[in-house]
Image (cartoon, rainbow, N blue to C red; front, side, top):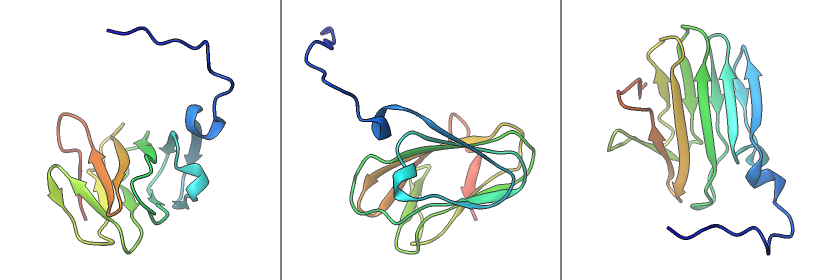
Length: 127
């Protein structure tokens, strides 16, 4: 495996290299500037609304719940999720199963929307 060298690095782009942490007890709407390394901790029932994608730009977000409440994640009306190998419809949201410490990672890897990584077991489902 090749070693990584930092010799030629002049600066790191903050929006790409530092995690942003948001804690919320209600539904929130994220902006495009919040979509790099975003970590959303939901402390009560609510949801996360995502901005529309403009291509496969590498946006990534983790939504995590520290309560047993059901959490919803809503894509833009023109975007879709690929959940456990199934492509959902445009605008169709996903939700947690209402278990403590459920988490889901979303990656914008296409112009159509988001790939969903919910761990070893399907803890998130189509709504």
